Image (cartoon, rainbow, N blue to C red; front, side, top):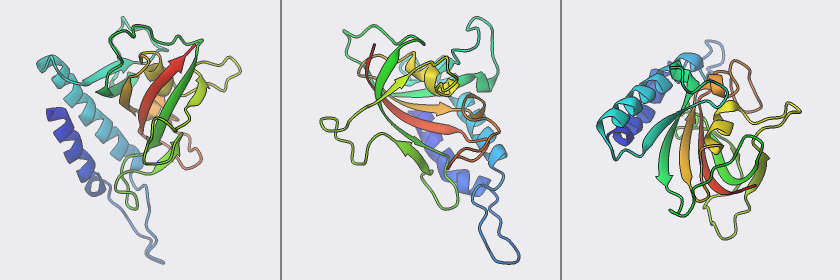
Length: 203
């Protein structure tokens, strides 16, 4: 609960952390001003809070998971990990998780951190329209790993490989496990990515 309150405070403060500037000539708002610094500060603070929660609260719903692409036995940097808030657990009968070579069927919704025009964060991709109706929403299928080079980002692939059928997670991915310093369509460089993911099936 403490992590959730901290996260709510941190997200609310983000518009203040980002020194939004305007062009002197036309007053145009710079949507993602100081974006790298804002994203690094957010993720570092949230990571610290999650680490404390994991150490002090045995019932915390938060955890962090090291990227699948690095050795899990060697301590990593802050941005070698994704942060996960477990919103709902899979049934107790579910014990398996996908492998890197598996395909998955999921519902997901991805957004950025809050910015000037998007106080809740810009939603850049979603497999469903709101409100979410599980009985009619059609999940999306992914290959967790793909040798053709069209694989999922490391952070998303890492989350999937730890989810059971029925898990519902909010996943925070540092930009180094996302798209890094490269801008994508609707996603600025250095973006922390926030995904709400529901695992439906895998094979």
